[in-house]
Length: 500
Image 1: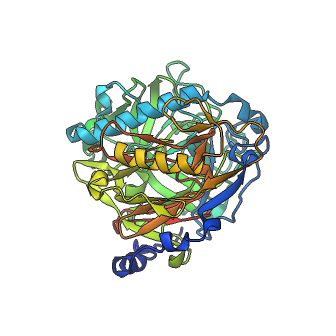
Image 2: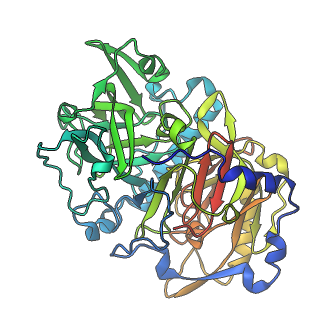
Image 3: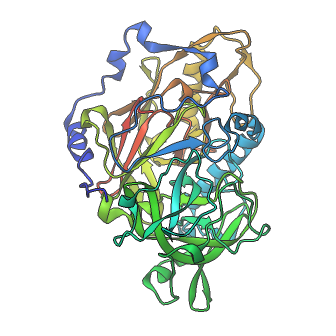
Protein backbone atom coordinates (compact mmCIF):
# COMPACT_ATOMS: atom_id res chain seq x y z
CA UNK A 1 0.00 0.00 0.00
CA UNK A 2 1.29 3.42 -0.88
CA UNK A 3 2.18 5.52 2.14
CA UNK A 4 -0.07 8.42 3.09
CA UNK A 5 1.04 11.83 1.84
CA UNK A 6 -0.13 15.12 3.36
CA UNK A 7 -2.54 16.88 1.03
CA UNK A 8 -0.45 20.03 0.93
CA UNK A 9 2.90 18.22 0.65
CA UNK A 10 3.44 19.86 -2.70
CA UNK A 11 1.02 22.70 -3.18
CA UNK A 12 0.87 24.70 0.04
CA UNK A 13 4.43 26.06 -0.07
CA UNK A 14 4.04 27.07 -3.68
CA UNK A 15 0.61 28.58 -3.09
CA UNK A 16 2.05 30.70 -0.28
CA UNK A 17 4.82 31.75 -2.65
CA UNK A 18 2.46 32.94 -5.35
CA UNK A 19 0.35 34.79 -2.80
CA UNK A 20 3.24 37.11 -2.03
CA UNK A 21 5.09 37.12 -5.34
CA UNK A 22 5.11 40.04 -7.71
CA UNK A 23 3.56 40.43 -11.17
CA UNK A 24 3.79 37.57 -13.63
CA UNK A 25 6.91 37.46 -15.79
CA UNK A 26 5.00 36.14 -18.80
CA UNK A 27 4.86 39.44 -20.67
CA UNK A 28 8.48 40.34 -19.90
CA UNK A 29 9.73 36.92 -20.88
CA UNK A 30 7.97 37.17 -24.22
CA UNK A 31 9.48 40.51 -25.16
CA UNK A 32 11.81 38.75 -27.58
CA UNK A 33 9.82 38.22 -30.77
CA UNK A 34 11.31 34.77 -31.26
CA UNK A 35 9.76 33.67 -27.97
CA UNK A 36 6.29 34.80 -28.98
CA UNK A 37 5.74 31.95 -31.46
CA UNK A 38 6.28 28.22 -31.70
CA UNK A 39 7.07 26.55 -35.01
CA UNK A 40 5.06 23.34 -35.22
CA UNK A 41 5.18 20.64 -37.85
CA UNK A 42 1.60 20.11 -39.02
CA UNK A 43 2.16 16.36 -38.99
CA UNK A 44 2.57 16.43 -35.20
CA UNK A 45 -0.90 17.86 -34.60
CA UNK A 46 -2.63 14.63 -35.59
CA UNK A 47 -2.14 11.09 -34.26
CA UNK A 48 -0.15 8.67 -36.38
CA UNK A 49 -0.85 5.01 -36.99
CA UNK A 50 1.47 3.72 -34.26
CA UNK A 51 1.53 4.15 -30.50
CA UNK A 52 4.73 5.93 -29.48
CA UNK A 53 4.33 5.35 -25.73
CA UNK A 54 5.30 8.00 -23.20
CA UNK A 55 6.98 11.16 -24.51
CA UNK A 56 8.13 11.93 -20.97
CA UNK A 57 8.97 9.45 -18.21
CA UNK A 58 5.92 9.19 -15.89
CA UNK A 59 6.22 10.46 -12.30
CA UNK A 60 7.87 8.45 -9.55
CA UNK A 61 4.59 7.95 -7.66
CA UNK A 62 3.96 4.25 -7.25
CA UNK A 63 0.24 4.92 -7.66
CA UNK A 64 0.40 6.02 -11.31
CA UNK A 65 -1.35 4.18 -14.13
CA UNK A 66 -1.14 4.75 -17.90
CA UNK A 67 -3.83 6.84 -19.56
CA UNK A 68 -4.84 6.88 -23.21
CA UNK A 69 -7.44 8.37 -25.53
CA UNK A 70 -10.23 6.26 -26.94
CA UNK A 71 -10.04 5.23 -30.59
CA UNK A 72 -6.34 5.99 -30.92
CA UNK A 73 -3.34 3.77 -31.65
CA UNK A 74 -2.44 3.66 -27.95
CA UNK A 75 -5.93 2.60 -26.95
CA UNK A 76 -5.47 -0.21 -24.44
CA UNK A 77 -8.94 -1.62 -25.07
CA UNK A 78 -8.57 -2.16 -28.81
CA UNK A 79 -7.58 -5.61 -30.02
CA UNK A 80 -6.20 -3.94 -33.13
CA UNK A 81 -4.86 -0.63 -31.88
CA UNK A 82 -3.29 0.31 -35.18
CA UNK A 83 -6.70 0.28 -36.81
CA UNK A 84 -8.34 2.20 -33.99
CA UNK A 85 -7.40 5.61 -35.35
CA UNK A 86 -9.63 4.93 -38.34
CA UNK A 87 -12.84 4.49 -36.34
CA UNK A 88 -12.98 7.87 -34.65
CA UNK A 89 -16.31 9.70 -34.64
CA UNK A 90 -16.53 12.51 -37.15
CA UNK A 91 -15.48 16.01 -36.15
CA UNK A 92 -19.07 17.18 -36.62
CA UNK A 93 -20.34 14.58 -34.16
CA UNK A 94 -17.56 15.24 -31.67
CA UNK A 95 -18.16 18.99 -31.62
CA UNK A 96 -21.92 18.51 -31.41
CA UNK A 97 -21.61 16.21 -28.42
CA UNK A 98 -19.04 18.53 -26.87
CA UNK A 99 -21.45 21.45 -27.06
CA UNK A 100 -24.18 19.39 -25.46
CA UNK A 101 -21.88 18.44 -22.60
CA UNK A 102 -20.89 22.08 -22.11
CA UNK A 103 -24.57 23.03 -22.07
CA UNK A 104 -25.17 20.43 -19.39
CA UNK A 105 -22.36 21.79 -17.21
CA UNK A 106 -23.94 25.23 -17.48
CA UNK A 107 -27.38 23.86 -16.62
CA UNK A 108 -26.06 22.21 -13.49
CA UNK A 109 -24.27 25.40 -12.44
CA UNK A 110 -27.33 27.55 -13.01
CA UNK A 111 -29.69 25.12 -11.26
CA UNK A 112 -27.75 24.09 -8.15
CA UNK A 113 -30.73 22.36 -6.61
CA UNK A 114 -30.54 19.79 -9.38
CA UNK A 115 -27.13 18.66 -8.02
CA UNK A 116 -26.53 16.87 -11.29
CA UNK A 117 -29.98 15.34 -10.92
CA UNK A 118 -29.41 12.84 -13.66
CA UNK A 119 -32.77 11.27 -12.88
CA UNK A 120 -34.44 14.18 -14.66
CA UNK A 121 -33.00 13.31 -18.06
CA UNK A 122 -33.13 16.88 -19.31
CA UNK A 123 -32.06 17.95 -22.77
CA UNK A 124 -28.33 17.95 -23.26
CA UNK A 125 -25.73 15.30 -22.60
CA UNK A 126 -22.96 14.35 -20.29
CA UNK A 127 -20.88 13.39 -23.27
CA UNK A 128 -21.39 9.64 -23.23
CA UNK A 129 -21.42 9.51 -27.02
CA UNK A 130 -18.41 11.83 -27.37
CA UNK A 131 -15.84 9.07 -27.51
CA UNK A 132 -12.86 10.45 -29.39
CA UNK A 133 -11.54 12.78 -26.71
CA UNK A 134 -12.22 10.66 -23.65
CA UNK A 135 -9.26 9.77 -21.43
CA UNK A 136 -9.43 6.29 -19.98
CA UNK A 137 -7.48 4.00 -17.69
CA UNK A 138 -7.55 0.31 -16.91
CA UNK A 139 -8.03 -1.08 -13.42
CA UNK A 140 -8.87 -4.45 -11.94
CA UNK A 141 -12.23 -4.94 -10.29
CA UNK A 142 -12.78 -7.49 -7.57
CA UNK A 143 -10.65 -10.45 -6.54
CA UNK A 144 -10.36 -14.14 -7.32
CA UNK A 145 -8.96 -17.27 -5.72
CA UNK A 146 -5.42 -18.20 -6.69
CA UNK A 147 -6.61 -21.55 -8.03
CA UNK A 148 -9.54 -20.04 -9.93
CA UNK A 149 -8.94 -19.71 -13.68
CA UNK A 150 -10.00 -16.54 -15.42
CA UNK A 151 -11.07 -15.96 -19.00
CA UNK A 152 -9.69 -12.43 -18.86
CA UNK A 153 -7.50 -11.69 -21.86
CA UNK A 154 -4.55 -10.11 -20.13
CA UNK A 155 -2.04 -10.05 -22.99
CA UNK A 156 -0.59 -6.57 -23.27
CA UNK A 157 -2.30 -5.55 -20.05
CA UNK A 158 -1.08 -2.42 -18.33
CA UNK A 159 -1.96 -3.96 -14.95
CA UNK A 160 -0.16 -7.08 -13.80
CA UNK A 161 -0.83 -9.39 -10.87
CA UNK A 162 1.50 -9.20 -7.89
CA UNK A 163 1.12 -10.82 -4.46
CA UNK A 164 1.82 -7.42 -2.87
CA UNK A 165 -1.50 -6.18 -4.20
CA UNK A 166 -3.54 -9.06 -2.87
CA UNK A 167 -5.53 -9.28 0.31
CA UNK A 168 -3.81 -9.70 3.64
CA UNK A 169 -4.08 -13.48 3.72
CA UNK A 170 -2.47 -13.80 0.30
CA UNK A 171 -5.29 -16.04 -0.85
CA UNK A 172 -6.85 -13.65 -3.35
CA UNK A 173 -5.67 -12.04 -6.55
CA UNK A 174 -7.03 -8.96 -8.33
CA UNK A 175 -9.99 -9.66 -10.56
CA UNK A 176 -10.89 -8.66 -14.11
CA UNK A 177 -9.56 -5.67 -15.99
CA UNK A 178 -12.10 -2.94 -16.67
CA UNK A 179 -11.55 0.12 -18.86
CA UNK A 180 -13.14 3.26 -17.43
CA UNK A 181 -13.38 6.89 -18.54
CA UNK A 182 -12.01 9.53 -16.15
CA UNK A 183 -14.68 12.09 -15.31
CA UNK A 184 -13.99 15.06 -13.02
CA UNK A 185 -17.58 16.26 -13.37
CA UNK A 186 -19.42 13.23 -11.98
CA UNK A 187 -19.56 11.51 -8.60
CA UNK A 188 -20.74 7.91 -8.99
CA UNK A 189 -18.28 5.39 -10.43
CA UNK A 190 -19.78 2.35 -12.14
CA UNK A 191 -19.01 -0.65 -14.34
CA UNK A 192 -21.25 -3.19 -16.03
CA UNK A 193 -21.82 -6.32 -13.94
CA UNK A 194 -23.06 -9.82 -14.64
CA UNK A 195 -25.96 -10.39 -15.19
CA UNK A 196 -25.91 -7.76 -17.90
CA UNK A 197 -27.51 -9.04 -21.11
CA UNK A 198 -26.83 -7.15 -24.33
CA UNK A 199 -29.17 -5.34 -24.68
CA UNK A 200 -30.09 -3.63 -22.36
CA UNK A 201 -26.38 -3.45 -21.50
CA UNK A 202 -23.88 -2.29 -24.12
CA UNK A 203 -21.24 -4.56 -25.64
CA UNK A 204 -17.75 -4.05 -24.21
CA UNK A 205 -14.25 -5.14 -25.15
CA UNK A 206 -13.36 -6.11 -21.58
CA UNK A 207 -14.63 -9.26 -19.92
CA UNK A 208 -17.75 -8.42 -17.91
CA UNK A 209 -17.15 -8.09 -14.19
CA UNK A 210 -18.98 -10.91 -12.38
CA UNK A 211 -19.43 -10.15 -8.67
CA UNK A 212 -20.16 -13.80 -7.90
CA UNK A 213 -16.56 -14.63 -8.86
CA UNK A 214 -15.10 -12.07 -6.46
CA UNK A 215 -14.18 -12.99 -2.91
CA UNK A 216 -14.38 -9.38 -1.74
CA UNK A 217 -17.65 -8.17 -3.29
CA UNK A 218 -20.50 -6.91 -1.13
CA UNK A 219 -23.79 -5.20 -1.93
CA UNK A 220 -24.79 -2.38 0.41
CA UNK A 221 -27.91 -2.95 2.52
CA UNK A 222 -30.63 -0.40 2.11
CA UNK A 223 -30.16 1.03 5.61
CA UNK A 224 -26.38 1.43 5.25
CA UNK A 225 -24.72 4.88 5.47
CA UNK A 226 -23.36 4.46 1.94
CA UNK A 227 -26.86 3.91 0.60
CA UNK A 228 -28.34 6.79 2.55
CA UNK A 229 -25.78 9.26 1.19
CA UNK A 230 -26.59 8.51 -2.45
CA UNK A 231 -29.14 11.33 -2.52
CA UNK A 232 -30.42 11.89 -6.10
CA UNK A 233 -28.66 8.73 -7.25
CA UNK A 234 -30.69 6.46 -4.93
CA UNK A 235 -33.12 4.17 -6.73
CA UNK A 236 -34.93 2.21 -4.05
CA UNK A 237 -34.27 -1.21 -2.64
CA UNK A 238 -34.43 -4.78 -3.98
CA UNK A 239 -34.02 -7.76 -1.64
CA UNK A 240 -32.51 -5.38 0.93
CA UNK A 241 -29.84 -4.36 -1.58
CA UNK A 242 -29.32 -0.66 -2.25
CA UNK A 243 -30.12 0.37 -5.81
CA UNK A 244 -28.66 3.33 -7.68
CA UNK A 245 -29.51 5.03 -10.94
CA UNK A 246 -27.56 7.58 -12.95
CA UNK A 247 -29.50 9.06 -15.85
CA UNK A 248 -27.56 11.42 -18.04
CA UNK A 249 -29.31 14.38 -19.65
CA UNK A 250 -29.31 12.83 -23.12
CA UNK A 251 -31.43 9.99 -21.75
CA UNK A 252 -28.52 7.54 -21.37
CA UNK A 253 -28.64 5.77 -18.04
CA UNK A 254 -27.10 3.14 -15.83
CA UNK A 255 -28.78 1.37 -12.94
CA UNK A 256 -28.11 -1.55 -10.66
CA UNK A 257 -26.83 -2.41 -7.21
CA UNK A 258 -24.68 -0.03 -5.18
CA UNK A 259 -21.78 -2.19 -4.07
CA UNK A 260 -18.18 -2.38 -2.89
CA UNK A 261 -15.19 -4.46 -3.92
CA UNK A 262 -11.42 -4.40 -4.21
CA UNK A 263 -10.13 -1.90 -6.81
CA UNK A 264 -6.57 -2.51 -8.00
CA UNK A 265 -4.98 0.33 -9.95
CA UNK A 266 -1.54 -1.24 -10.27
CA UNK A 267 0.48 -3.97 -8.49
CA UNK A 268 1.16 -1.79 -5.45
CA UNK A 269 -1.95 0.41 -5.31
CA UNK A 270 -5.33 -0.93 -4.31
CA UNK A 271 -8.49 0.49 -2.74
CA UNK A 272 -10.30 -1.91 -0.43
CA UNK A 273 -14.08 -1.68 -0.20
CA UNK A 274 -14.29 0.70 -3.14
CA UNK A 275 -17.88 1.88 -3.56
CA UNK A 276 -19.37 1.86 -7.05
CA UNK A 277 -22.44 1.15 -9.08
CA UNK A 278 -22.75 -2.45 -10.27
CA UNK A 279 -24.68 -1.78 -13.45
CA UNK A 280 -27.14 -4.41 -14.69
CA UNK A 281 -29.01 -2.15 -17.11
CA UNK A 282 -27.85 0.75 -19.22
CA UNK A 283 -29.53 2.59 -22.00
CA UNK A 284 -28.21 4.91 -24.67
CA UNK A 285 -25.03 5.16 -26.70
CA UNK A 286 -22.14 3.88 -24.58
CA UNK A 287 -18.83 3.07 -26.20
CA UNK A 288 -17.79 -0.56 -26.54
CA UNK A 289 -14.23 0.32 -25.50
CA UNK A 290 -15.30 1.13 -21.96
CA UNK A 291 -17.01 -0.73 -19.15
CA UNK A 292 -18.06 2.36 -17.23
CA UNK A 293 -17.01 5.63 -15.59
CA UNK A 294 -14.38 6.44 -12.96
CA UNK A 295 -15.94 9.42 -11.20
CA UNK A 296 -13.49 11.98 -9.77
CA UNK A 297 -15.91 14.77 -8.78
CA UNK A 298 -16.22 16.42 -5.39
CA UNK A 299 -19.16 14.34 -4.13
CA UNK A 300 -18.70 11.72 -1.38
CA UNK A 301 -19.18 8.82 -3.81
CA UNK A 302 -16.18 9.61 -6.07
CA UNK A 303 -12.80 7.88 -6.08
CA UNK A 304 -11.14 11.10 -4.92
CA UNK A 305 -13.41 11.36 -1.88
CA UNK A 306 -13.26 7.67 -0.99
CA UNK A 307 -9.45 7.65 -0.93
CA UNK A 308 -9.04 10.93 0.95
CA UNK A 309 -7.70 9.29 4.11
CA UNK A 310 -4.89 7.57 2.21
CA UNK A 311 -4.07 10.05 -0.53
CA UNK A 312 -5.00 13.34 1.10
CA UNK A 313 -7.78 14.21 -1.37
CA UNK A 314 -5.17 14.70 -4.09
CA UNK A 315 -5.17 13.28 -7.60
CA UNK A 316 -3.59 14.28 -10.88
CA UNK A 317 -3.52 13.40 -14.54
CA UNK A 318 -1.70 14.36 -17.70
CA UNK A 319 -3.42 14.05 -21.08
CA UNK A 320 -1.07 13.38 -24.02
CA UNK A 321 -0.79 15.77 -27.00
CA UNK A 322 -2.35 13.28 -29.40
CA UNK A 323 -3.75 9.77 -29.27
CA UNK A 324 -0.35 8.48 -30.44
CA UNK A 325 1.07 8.96 -26.95
CA UNK A 326 0.28 7.81 -23.42
CA UNK A 327 -0.46 10.01 -20.43
CA UNK A 328 -0.91 9.09 -16.78
CA UNK A 329 -3.27 9.23 -13.81
CA UNK A 330 -2.00 9.48 -10.22
CA UNK A 331 -3.55 9.24 -6.77
CA UNK A 332 -1.76 11.32 -4.14
CA UNK A 333 0.58 14.31 -4.19
CA UNK A 334 3.13 14.27 -7.03
CA UNK A 335 6.74 13.48 -6.23
CA UNK A 336 7.93 16.38 -8.35
CA UNK A 337 9.71 19.55 -7.25
CA UNK A 338 7.21 22.23 -6.25
CA UNK A 339 9.09 24.79 -8.34
CA UNK A 340 7.93 23.01 -11.50
CA UNK A 341 4.27 23.82 -10.77
CA UNK A 342 2.24 26.99 -10.89
CA UNK A 343 -0.64 26.99 -8.41
CA UNK A 344 -3.98 28.74 -8.17
CA UNK A 345 -6.77 28.48 -5.56
CA UNK A 346 -9.51 25.94 -6.17
CA UNK A 347 -13.03 27.34 -6.03
CA UNK A 348 -15.89 25.22 -4.69
CA UNK A 349 -19.62 25.90 -4.46
CA UNK A 350 -21.34 23.83 -1.75
CA UNK A 351 -24.53 23.91 -3.83
CA UNK A 352 -22.71 22.11 -6.66
CA UNK A 353 -20.02 20.08 -4.84
CA UNK A 354 -19.20 17.97 -7.88
CA UNK A 355 -17.37 20.72 -9.75
CA UNK A 356 -13.84 22.06 -9.30
CA UNK A 357 -13.38 25.64 -10.48
CA UNK A 358 -10.50 28.07 -10.94
CA UNK A 359 -10.48 31.80 -11.60
CA UNK A 360 -9.07 32.90 -14.95
CA UNK A 361 -7.71 36.44 -14.77
CA UNK A 362 -6.27 37.12 -18.23
CA UNK A 363 -4.94 35.56 -21.43
CA UNK A 364 -1.57 36.24 -23.04
CA UNK A 365 -1.18 35.91 -26.83
CA UNK A 366 2.31 36.21 -28.33
CA UNK A 367 3.53 38.01 -25.22
CA UNK A 368 0.68 40.51 -25.04
CA UNK A 369 -2.03 40.45 -22.39
CA UNK A 370 -5.58 40.83 -23.64
CA UNK A 371 -6.39 42.99 -20.58
CA UNK A 372 -9.98 41.80 -20.40
CA UNK A 373 -11.91 43.40 -17.53
CA UNK A 374 -11.72 41.16 -14.40
CA UNK A 375 -15.51 41.15 -14.10
CA UNK A 376 -15.72 39.13 -17.32
CA UNK A 377 -14.08 36.14 -15.60
CA UNK A 378 -15.92 36.53 -12.28
CA UNK A 379 -17.94 33.31 -12.66
CA UNK A 380 -14.78 31.18 -12.72
CA UNK A 381 -13.98 28.23 -14.98
CA UNK A 382 -14.89 24.58 -14.40
CA UNK A 383 -12.10 22.06 -14.86
CA UNK A 384 -13.55 19.21 -16.90
CA UNK A 385 -11.67 16.14 -18.07
CA UNK A 386 -14.35 15.27 -20.62
CA UNK A 387 -15.33 18.56 -22.29
CA UNK A 388 -12.90 18.90 -25.20
CA UNK A 389 -12.98 22.59 -26.20
CA UNK A 390 -12.46 25.37 -23.65
CA UNK A 391 -15.39 27.76 -23.31
CA UNK A 392 -14.72 31.44 -22.59
CA UNK A 393 -16.96 34.43 -21.85
CA UNK A 394 -17.81 36.05 -25.21
CA UNK A 395 -15.89 39.25 -24.41
CA UNK A 396 -12.75 37.26 -23.63
CA UNK A 397 -13.17 34.96 -26.60
CA UNK A 398 -13.62 37.85 -29.05
CA UNK A 399 -10.42 39.47 -27.76
CA UNK A 400 -8.54 36.17 -28.02
CA UNK A 401 -9.85 35.51 -31.52
CA UNK A 402 -8.86 38.96 -32.75
CA UNK A 403 -5.35 38.68 -31.30
CA UNK A 404 -4.89 35.18 -32.71
CA UNK A 405 -6.16 36.04 -36.17
CA UNK A 406 -3.91 39.10 -36.42
CA UNK A 407 -0.87 36.92 -35.69
CA UNK A 408 -1.97 34.18 -38.09
CA UNK A 409 -2.68 36.50 -41.02
CA UNK A 410 -0.09 34.85 -43.26
CA UNK A 411 -2.17 31.67 -43.40
CA UNK A 412 -5.25 31.11 -45.54
CA UNK A 413 -8.44 30.94 -43.50
CA UNK A 414 -10.95 28.14 -43.99
CA UNK A 415 -14.66 27.76 -43.34
CA UNK A 416 -15.75 27.38 -39.70
CA UNK A 417 -16.15 23.87 -38.31
CA UNK A 418 -19.14 23.73 -36.02
CA UNK A 419 -18.47 25.78 -32.88
CA UNK A 420 -14.91 26.53 -34.08
CA UNK A 421 -15.01 29.76 -36.08
CA UNK A 422 -11.30 30.49 -36.61
CA UNK A 423 -9.99 27.79 -38.93
CA UNK A 424 -7.13 27.61 -41.41
CA UNK A 425 -6.29 25.71 -44.56
CA UNK A 426 -2.85 24.23 -44.01
CA UNK A 427 -2.88 22.20 -47.23
CA UNK A 428 0.69 21.89 -48.43
CA UNK A 429 2.02 23.63 -45.30
CA UNK A 430 4.66 21.59 -43.51
CA UNK A 431 5.07 23.80 -40.44
CA UNK A 432 3.03 26.52 -38.79
CA UNK A 433 4.28 29.47 -36.74
CA UNK A 434 1.77 29.40 -33.89
CA UNK A 435 1.51 32.35 -31.47
CA UNK A 436 2.09 31.22 -27.90
CA UNK A 437 -0.96 31.40 -25.64
CA UNK A 438 -0.89 31.41 -21.85
CA UNK A 439 -3.85 31.33 -19.49
CA UNK A 440 -3.24 33.44 -16.40
CA UNK A 441 -5.16 32.24 -13.36
CA UNK A 442 -5.62 33.84 -9.95
CA UNK A 443 -2.37 34.53 -8.05
CA UNK A 444 -0.53 35.05 -11.35
CA UNK A 445 -0.49 31.36 -12.16
CA UNK A 446 0.44 31.55 -15.85
CA UNK A 447 0.05 28.31 -17.80
CA UNK A 448 1.45 28.26 -21.33
CA UNK A 449 -0.49 25.93 -23.59
CA UNK A 450 1.06 23.27 -25.75
CA UNK A 451 0.50 23.82 -29.51
CA UNK A 452 -1.83 20.81 -29.39
CA UNK A 453 -3.96 22.85 -26.99
CA UNK A 454 -4.12 25.82 -29.35
CA UNK A 455 -4.91 24.26 -32.74
CA UNK A 456 -7.54 21.54 -33.05
CA UNK A 457 -8.24 20.18 -36.54
CA UNK A 458 -6.72 23.33 -37.98
CA UNK A 459 -8.86 25.66 -35.84
CA UNK A 460 -8.36 27.82 -32.78
CA UNK A 461 -9.41 25.41 -30.04
CA UNK A 462 -11.66 27.78 -28.08
CA UNK A 463 -15.34 28.69 -28.23
CA UNK A 464 -17.59 31.32 -26.67
CA UNK A 465 -20.31 30.93 -24.08
CA UNK A 466 -23.69 32.54 -24.65
CA UNK A 467 -22.94 35.48 -22.33
CA UNK A 468 -20.30 36.80 -19.93
CA UNK A 469 -22.25 35.78 -16.83
CA UNK A 470 -21.74 32.09 -17.50
CA UNK A 471 -18.80 30.18 -16.05
CA UNK A 472 -16.04 29.17 -18.40
CA UNK A 473 -14.98 25.54 -18.91
CA UNK A 474 -11.33 24.50 -19.15
CA UNK A 475 -11.52 21.64 -21.63
CA UNK A 476 -9.23 18.68 -22.05
CA UNK A 477 -7.70 19.90 -25.33
CA UNK A 478 -6.15 22.86 -23.51
CA UNK A 479 -4.99 20.55 -20.71
CA UNK A 480 -2.92 18.35 -23.04
CA UNK A 481 0.71 17.72 -21.96
CA UNK A 482 0.01 19.54 -18.66
CA UNK A 483 -0.08 17.66 -15.37
CA UNK A 484 -3.16 19.00 -13.58
CA UNK A 485 -3.07 18.40 -9.82
CA UNK A 486 -6.35 18.59 -7.89
CA UNK A 487 -5.51 19.24 -4.24
CA UNK A 488 -9.11 19.07 -3.09
CA UNK A 489 -8.30 19.03 0.62
CA UNK A 490 -5.90 21.95 0.34
CA UNK A 491 -8.11 23.99 -1.99
CA UNK A 492 -5.57 24.39 -4.78
CA UNK A 493 -4.93 23.37 -8.39
CA UNK A 494 -1.42 22.92 -9.74
CA UNK A 495 -0.22 22.91 -13.36
CA UNK A 496 3.07 21.48 -14.67
CA UNK A 497 3.94 21.92 -18.34
CA UNK A 498 5.50 19.29 -20.59
CA UNK A 499 4.65 16.51 -18.15
CA UNK A 500 3.62 13.92 -20.76
